[in-house]
Image 1: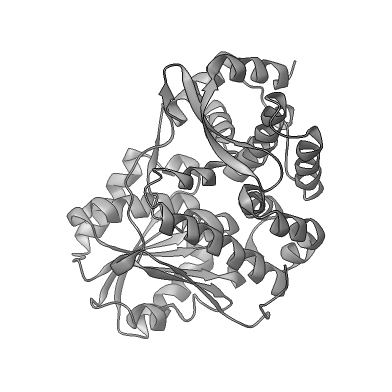
Image 2: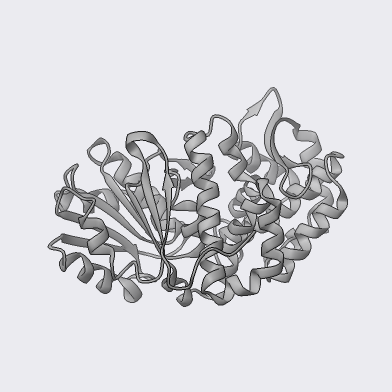
Length: 377
């Protein structure tokens, strides 16, 4: 893998979905340029911006000014920060805000924030007026490389994560790489888990590049832009081939089956576990579980664990503070997250680094035995 970006260059990744295709713009200064980029694509002149209490003090005024400079009339709603915002209560607030702003179909709803705000706002945009135009302005690494791309939107339920929602593609994604400098190290690491995921799915050369260059990705500049663009292109290719997860798009869930169950078990308490940390543990477990099933070498799991540990991510369940429920309770969450057919589960397993595949015949008994082995004693 070779470097093709410069620190000041802007990259564009196209998500090819016919007449619903859209661009992902990646690079510095995109919030300041948001008015111009949006005005050139938007027929309407009204926007409802939804953000959260963490992002608003940092970027909302600048974003609203950029819209105003292009004659776009914008209103904003600031919601609480955190995973618990992905709820019916806040979905109703978002929908009411959009309707109160008299947003019409040629206007747009904008998500200015991380994955939580993107998922919630996209869901609101997908159901208000039976579908409104939607723009993602992701402000976390995790959102820039994963949740802002592909049209999955939704909220959480007491039964599990992201179980209520719709597919609703954005019309534009503006991934401003400057904003990542304000992330905490923990948040950046959590987003990096999703970057590593793309290498582990089917890009072993990218994973090897990350093993060598991860410090430069964390530092910013060329390597960061390259990693984000490569991740977005990987997701764009999968979404274009399988928009509604009828087949290979499920590969994007590598690590998420275990990870989502762990998030549910911690009651979405970000002090204990954030999404990317759950994915990092989940990807490690997925490789270890594949080893248990004699699908891949133990060395592959050790390599994955070593890299994630090196960047500072958790890789085992005993690193989650506060304890976890028994294997049977985690199994219930896993069964909600993925369809069960005749007592067997769909999992993303692997034959080695960059060799993931969809397995739809995993016995629940094997998963429970594995969880009992891996849970803290």
